[in-house]
Picture 1 (cartoon, rainbow, N blue to C red):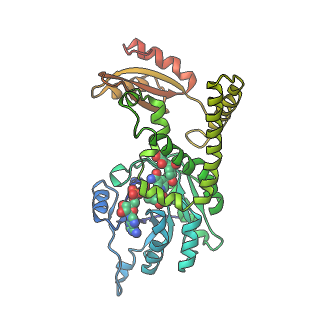
Picture 2: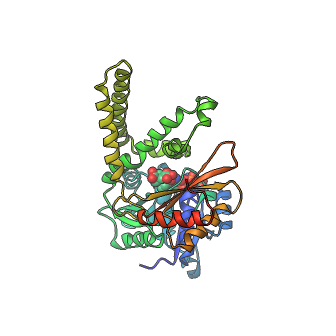
Picture 3: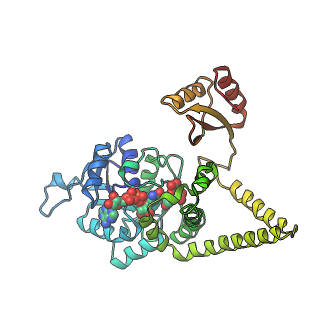
Length: 368
Ligand SMILES: NC(=O)c1ccc[n+]([C@@H]2O[C@H](COP(=O)([O-])OP(=O)(O)OC[C@H]3O[C@@H](n4cnc5c(N)ncnc54)[C@H](O)[C@@H]3O)[C@@H](O)[C@H]2O)c1
Ligand SMILES: O=C(O)C(=O)C[C@]1(C(=O)O)C=C[C@@H](O)C=C1
């Protein structure tokens, strides 16, 4: 199915990222948001042109403006009302949304009397802790899972349109029922988010000494806690029971770990067993997370390089990787507080780590 024109309603992080990805593939993109500033910024970023809703008595040429697909990229609670309004305007042939919860918006759409034949709900499992068009990236969805949840009423052509959208954004389609989707994301996204917030909340009144000692561990565990609380309240409320169930299990594990540590502090050496078991279960769970492109979990080797805190250092580092033909799978930076240097950690295939380390040392880089 060909997508020539796509309408994006909600030009925030996800809507604008999808729009940028589609523009890159030559698709015409129309942009709408209740916040005109968000539309303007998305347009200036090259995400498309402003949508002019059709009025009654339109000409044939204007009717041709009807988009092939509309992507509703607004907070979950507004998806169904937006769908109803867009369908009333006959704004597109087919519709999807990208909300992080699926059962409730679909249920609400049915209640409101939306046409479920032209609507296939979806959800890209990619995002950031920042909101708004300014945080958008055209490569946000590359290699990421993108769930689609067609109902029984859905027209196969509507599903084909959403599959094409997912393909154009470089993501991997995963078809799943809305109920299964919501249970799954409670485990892999929503409960982890609350857990990250709980850990980050401990830092609110941590001492300056503690914060000065913050390393990469706490940054990794709390990154998503920086997200918009309003958006996340909507996501969690839309998937409340499945998330509560996972959180209760996490809370039990945490309570058991705390009791075991209390017992250990009081001299009960056997308590180490309980802690070891939890840590080992954690390793098993972590190892089950699939790799970058949805394939089996893979562990990369980490090459750490000392870099000066000045412009152009990373570019020079990547140039060496390029020269020796080593693909960098991931990169993360750690700044040493108060020092004019930091550590860049490059994740590479294990058999490339030696080559890269040698090449870097030969060129004068400090590889500890
Ligand atoms: N943030 C993530 O990591 C992420 C990832 C995947 C999916 N999602 C889902 O994508 C959707 C958008 O999230 P986001 O992160 O892009 O948020 P965002 O805050 O960056 O953007 C949301 C945009 O929707 C607009 N909006 C709100 N109500 C509207 C309405 N009724 N009509 C038109 N525009 C409206 C806002 O003005 C804003 O520009 C949400 O449903 C969210 O659950 C988010
Ligand atoms: O990586 C992030 O910052 C995210 O918030 C992404 C994330 C996730 O949990 O993986 C968060 C919510 C979305 O619905 C989809 C993706």
